[in-house]
Length: 403
Image (tube, rainbow, N blue to C red; front, side, top):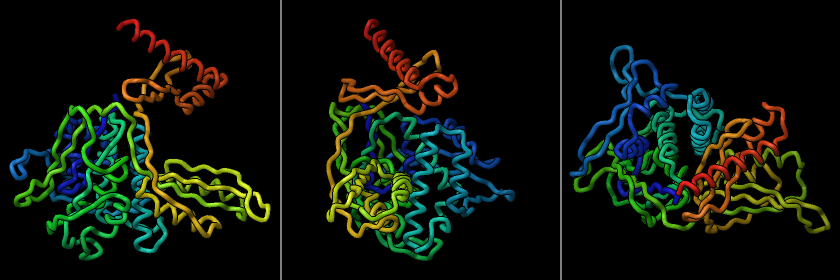
């Protein structure tokens, strides 16, 4: 049965609150520090302090980065290309690096849209500081370490009032935060604070497959991450819960965008596909169709998380010749997925296993692993693929006999 991570954002969410909750759940700070060693300067350490928020014990996470004079220094600002280079140089799993870079690029697109500049010119301020980079990369890595098959979030309490930023005093939620929350359910209880930060909005919307009440689960782990301030009469904490999901596929709402094109250079379609996947599209595919005036055309179909819809619309209108895009929201149900590694005579191959409840419905060797080993061993890729299937079935049969 797959595991689910539920995020209770009734007091908002920030990157440090999310990491605090995962540490409270049992993630060792030492492991987190080792994973992030590639971006931590000498003398920098990660701190997890036990604090009280309205009577609830929680972990407050912080980055301790003393400068040469012994004072705190978190405020180096960076361009997107600098942050991507930092993450690419880290000794993290490929999936974690890719996810972190995907999130930073999404944030760059949002900032570029707000300021009306090319994404290459986006200059991150608060989110470009080391502590924010640690929050984002660390949370991506930590969530992956949980081995959950889905993330679900409650509606987000965004707070109220104004917040001081490098661009001056802005209304809550700040423009970038609000754009990142597009498609997610939000509300405000009137608390005059910024409860959802840009890093928190980025991490939650970048991971959550759906939003709503806590799904049916058997609870296994609970963690509380503390916000930096005490809020009178309300615990300023993010609650994270991990449990075994019910025996159904994970449901989520997705946006489906379609347009017909019959007058565009076909070379653009490849570039368009790459742009849409960089934004976070789940699926992009092209279907040949016959259009009016007997013209052969292409039906472009894009499936995205709801919060990516507007960005995908912008790309379709900017990069193609279409003058109209149809879009709708649909429910999608996905099987719970997990990874196993099998050993073959050619080398190790990862196998993606899909389950509906306890029942395995599919097991597929990772083709990238098969193609890499085929090139290294100079054998047909179909032989490596077949060997991986046999190895997986051998492991499955051995487990059945031992039971």
